[in-house]
Image (cartoon, rainbow, N blue to C red; front, top):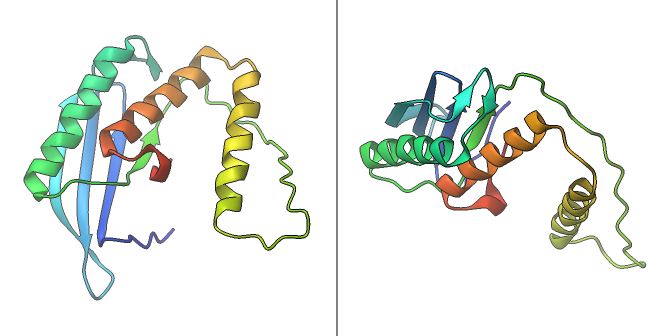
Length: 151
C-alpha cells in the first residue's frame, strides 16, 4: 500500500503489549522515505493484546509519539496505527446517505463516517473491540488530529 502524504511526512505507530514504537519519515522526491524520527517506550496499561489501564496506555503512546516528534523536529498531523489484539473483531456496516439528486462532494464520506460511527456506538462492543477503539482514539489524540487519523 502506498500512502501519499499531504505534507511529505508519514508517521507509523505500533502499539504492542511489550513496547510502543513510532517512526516518522519524510518522503523524498524519488518517492522513498527517509526516517527522521524514532520514538519507543515500554508498553504500559496493556497485557496480552488488551488494554487494562487506559490512562497508562495513553501516557505511553503520547510519550512515544512526542519522542519521535522531538527527534524529527516535526509535529505530526496524521498517523498510521497498528494494533494487535487478543480477539480482534470487525463488523461490516451498510450505510446509506441520502443525496436527493445533489452532487456527491467532499462532505459525503465524512457524513457516511459520522453515520457509521453513531450506528456502531448503538451496538454493544466486546471488551477487546472497545479497548482497541480506545487505543486508536488515544493514538489519534497523540497525532493531534483524530479526524485525519488512519487506522
